[in-house]
Length: 144
Figure 1: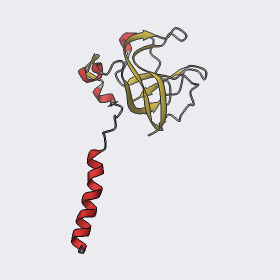
Figure 2: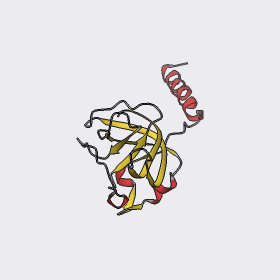
Figure 3: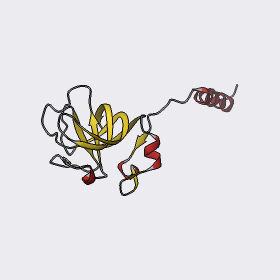
Figure 4: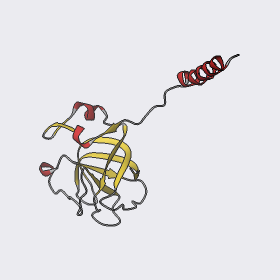
């Protein structure tokens, strides 16, 4: 076996396992700009993911109070919580993220990746009165 034959057979042997490996399922991700198609009309792609586990990158707005079980994920860093009193005022660049475990607050200017079950439709939090249109449930998050 000469050098060229050896190299060619080695490369071919490395390529075959890569071709036969099953593809890993990835968590679908959304971007804030892809949530809505017009105004408050949910984009079809986002609506199709209702009930699915997704990931989205954003910024953790400072929580309403330390013991609250959710945080607001924003498209841009916000130094104060963008609490909304009325569903008609709901901005299109917020997603409420509910965690099963206590929330470790992240600095408002730190980009985080959040994963959770995506829910759509207006809902009022019973404890705080916070109104949401888009939510992630049972979230986990880490620095992006």
